[in-house]
Length: 111
Ligand code: FES
Image 1: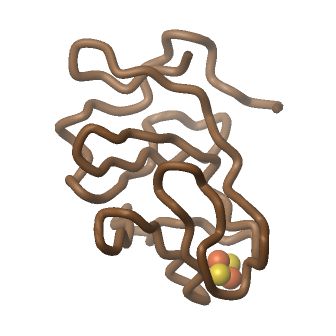
Image 2 (image 1 turned 45 degrees about the horizontal axis):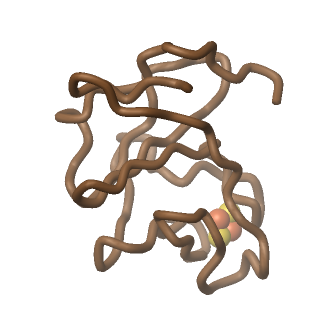
């Protein structure tokens, strides 16, 4: 994927991400959202597969429901936080595009 961060790139500090919740990554070449619920941390391309809108609001606020689903703020599609699979709404059987990460010393880094 074009613009993917090089391994080791710091995308976000863990303590900058609401738990449960999400936040856009500190990375400009590709829009990435980092999601967190307890020990589960995932990163996805920050583009909803329904109509290509971001999963976060302009303020960076990200809607996570029940600690399990990220909700697209535009038309309400929900996606499993852990897998990126669509769980309801207008995005059908699509899924979010994952970005490989690891958490090291409190930092979410590209893998
Ligand atoms: S753009 Fe996300 S549900 Fe439509």
